[in-house]
Amino acid sequence: MSGAAGQEAWLLRFQEGIGHFNAGRMADAEAAFGAAAAAKPDHPVVRLNHGVALRLLGRREEAVTALRTALGLRGDLHDACLHLAETLGELGRAQEALDAWRALMAVRPDHPGAALGMAGLLMRADLPELAERVYRVAVAVDPGSATAANNLGAAIMSQRRLEDAAAAYRRGVALDPSSPEYHKNLGIARMMAGDLQGGGPEYEWRELQSVWKWRRSFPGVPRWDGGPLAGRTILVHFEQGLGDSFQYVRYMAVLKAMGARVVFECQKPLKRVLSGVAGIDALVAAGEPLPPFDCHTPLMSLPWLCGTTKDTVPGGVPYIRAEVALVESWGRRMDRAEFRIGINWQANEANRSIPLALFEGIARIPGVRLYSLQKVVGTEQAAALRDRLGIIDWSADMDAGPDGFVDTAAVMANMDLIISCDSAVNHLAGAMGLPALAVLRWFGDWRWMTIPDHTPWYPTMRLLRSERKNDWTGVMERAAAEVTMRAGLHRAARHRTAS
Image (tube, rainbow, N blue to C red):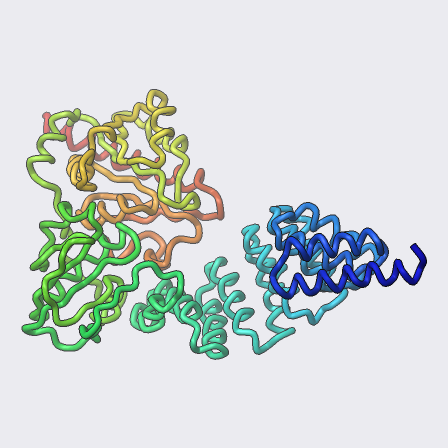
């Protein structure tokens, strides 16, 4: 083929590729760009377009090769740097992706996506300190970017600097006041700092997020706005986790005291365990028919609507009680001379879960017996360590039917102490007014606020917070010291009673 004919052939295929690409026919675009690259192997833009098409088809390894070839031909091709960095990130090749982001920032310091992409990678690598520095570059490059401001807030928040995080989130809200996510993030930062009334209105935006799973709509029935309730029926509908229902169901008594008839719609497994909670006139499980009501509200709006501050958290603990017959039945199976500890080590999220092996120091304390409160997830650890830790595991017999936490609550009521990660069991222990140690990760959930060792929500609970990121060993050593003290007092009390 002559030079002119060859030039015309590769250009024709390249143009075909652009046409297919713009029409969304990615497989055809990749074939055309591949043919153009074979005919014109030293053209960087052809290689770039081929790499992009390969990436969009999910053929990421081939895309990396094409994009690296493009950059080898022209090192300042910033779109190739961008796609290479993003593709390497999608492949989980973090260090290579980081190098690609750095290269993009070198050739195009003002690229609006470079600093954001690099900082996002650093956040996913759990390096918020470095991410903060890069997000500040993103803010400097594009001061009008609400995304950069919001993400800067997230990086700062991950370092537990709540006031600074709130300032960044406020900037994001000011730049994009219609964003539900930015408002919600600001609300969480304020509530974690203990400002429930300042954070509450911002947290109300959560329901407008497209990803929100708990949004409810009742045409013709208004949302409760915190106004008078005397003589009115209010529907409170659950949202988020089981632990949230345990924590906030206390507000049913508050609404009742305001003169309301209270209907609470709970998660189906919780209907029986919540049946004795004060203030509920009608308890309905999700999916059951609802009685008539005059207004409604999601459960987690109640602290704000009821005017709660960290100093005025409604009491009433215990407001959840185990069934007496079940408490007695499970209690007959236990050795009353032992210091009985119910343990729950695994939550739904790995970063809130404690390796069961770290309970060994507690298991070795004289007179202590561990009882598993774990269901479903994490039970395989108990099977592997049962003999080593001397765990009593009745999980196969507990809550075997449709009712959740009924047997669990009865077993817990027979314990001298509950030790739990951040899970529904933890909230149930607090709601039952049981002696409890909550073992929390370094950056705990906003619901626990920042008070070092206690929470206004649960007066019988002590908080043990990890002192360093990803370090459960140190905090579990502190838990063992606490148990040693409590078990010693237990033995002394039994000795006085016996004598």
